[in-house]
Amino acid sequence: MNRHVLMLVVNRLIIAVITLLIVSFTVFAATEMLPGDVAQILLGQAATAEAVAGLRTAMHLDDPAIVRFARWLAGLASGDLGTSYANNLPIADLIGPRFLSSMKLAAATAVFSVPIALFLGITAAILRGTLFDRVVTAVTIGVISVPEFMVATSAVLIFAVYLQWLPALAFANEVHSFGELLRVFAMPVITLSFVISAQMIRMTRAAVIETLNTPYIEMALLKGASRRRIVLKHALPNALGPIVNAVALSLSYLLGGVIIVETIFNYPGIAKLMVDAVATRDLPLIQTCSMVFCLGYLLLITIADIIAILSNPRLR
Image (tube, rainbow, N blue to C red):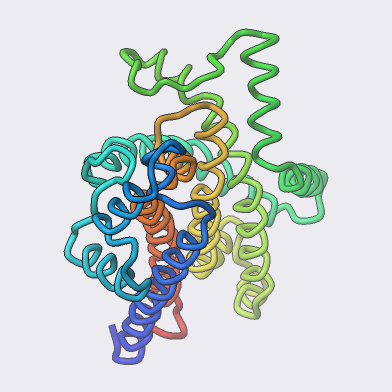
């Protein structure tokens, strides 16, 4: 790795850290603006003003916002995620099992959707202008136009209500066999795959077409290289950076789509936990869940950028 490439990677990592700090401030400020008094919500409407004031003091809610932000950020940096307001349990204990459940759903979606999307995107680029390319392009545009909640709701109505092939709710803790695993993950994975596959196909197709239009590909054609050799030996290796970016950006949509999917299918993941925390105004839990999503998104984008830098032959 030469010095220029190393500096680009280091700069990208510095930008990621700065972005994470900005995001943490934004998340804290957004949760602070949620309506309602946390102490009043926890104690109920029948609580006296003295009890509410005492709880606010005990929970340090009367401290200045900048002091609470600094305390929260220092806790995150030291690995202390804090304590849930709603049930007085460590947030790490609440998030741990839910995070694993969400990772299982995300992994199943990635394993199912990424190979299909890459195959369709690369094939459509190679067969550009053919009937296959036009059909793939039309279908992806149609899929992108449909929101996730519509796909999830339609899947429930068709496969759970009318056909009764699959359960309407995804109880991941009740899986004891491979068949039950398929039944539990089928509709959430299909819904999320609709969310990410279409974007991945479009971006992969665009990246490969851009590479195929470069002068060195034209030179390889003039030299008589076979189409297979041009695609496998020249186009795909040089399109690796944009393709990885397409995969990372598409997988980052999981972070938004999983909130809707886990809510509709009652899947016990971290997104469902955050939605429940919003209902109870559990600010530390909301903040931590939001930071997990933001960190995941930032991690995917940073890894994609670094791979794009390392795979760029001009930089090497």
